[in-house]
Image 1 (tube, helix red, strand yellow):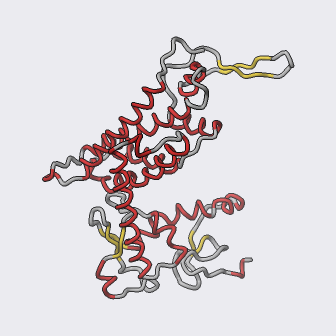
Image 2 (cartoon, helix red, strand yellow):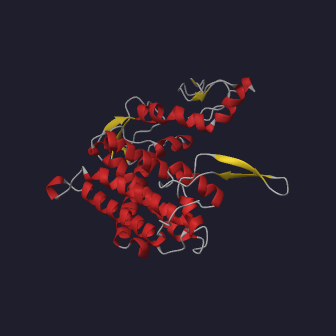
Image 3 (cartoon, helix red, strand yellow):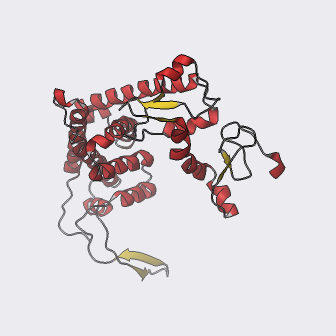
Length: 321
């Protein structure tokens, strides 16, 4: 049972909107050049406010799951329950599990919100939310300028998440709810998508193998974490073909100008991680870890174990089947 009612659902919504608006304001200031009044350190408060605002908006939606005349149930949905849950026998002989003691005065965290979304049939893209949480954690331990590119990418990714959640789950107009902050989110999202399309076009011109796109699209700059990566202009000017040697091909980060080799970009950063995801069931069944072998056809370390097919050239080692 709860004590005296403490939940003001309208205040919860207002705080969510205010936190998101403050986060967008901080984000704008953090992205400007210092000579123009920019403050890179505001990136930390930006991600804190955005993350807090999104979670408050989620809690508001959870509370809406029950009618407004059931105030106590609304509070129980967003406050942490008692630790102990005991079994009780009903008149029909069935066991009913009930929490004992009072609900806590602290509200639920990310893991509990996610669990309640599943049971209450509320939807969002948790991958983006978890990335935003990771961005916050990074900024807590690093100088803000180290992740400015990553921050800009996440703000762009947050746009469709907020759009769909506000429109589909809250049944409200995102533009009206977030007001001026919505235009900033939209502008950042459009800039991000336009820049990314141009970056991908440049990689396409270099004939990146089709099955390598999943790695390329998710690879981030080693310095700032931005995914807005493009091949160096000199390779484009030469008409370089990525099907040839990889050892001299370099990328450049659109956000910070950082340069790196394509081999490190594709292999070291994401290749093993993605293979574990794509081939996890087979590895589990065989009780062996994912291991890359050198492909007999293209001679690259892009062949998972002995079986399978090369993720670079599609070669299949049929002698193993």
